[in-house]
Length: 158
Image (cartoon, rainbow, N blue to C red; front, top):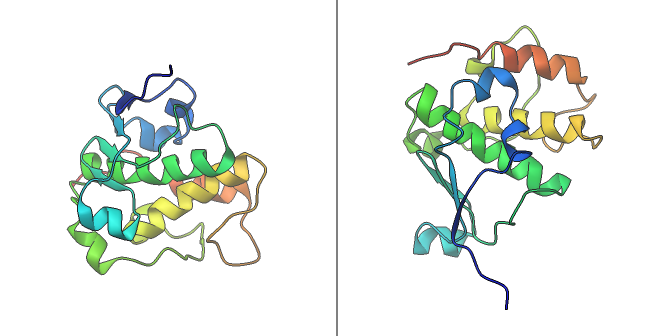
């Protein structure tokens, strides 16, 4: 009989999903993936919720290995970063639900909205894994453009 887990730490591979400029601002040892809905409303909406270092991801895999799982986890890890480095708690989410973005390498990472930042990193992971971006406008930016924009987040603090 296979044991069912409810909470786990990030695996070695998952710890490498975020670009260094974001990963350095998070205590990756403290991050927990909790394989259940956060609230009944989250269950109704079928959404993953981040609260501090906790990622409530119903149906989370034992390890994010597929491109879709890796990109999704990277997206949620950006919300952990926002919570820790920027002291953004999720209230901003109500006013910042735009996921689509036009990547401009002259525009710093912090100038994008809450969900746009997460989408940029999600698409960075997808592109790094050899898959086209999901939410970027065409023509699709190059990986180096993503790296430049994301690197501008280094050292950001509230």
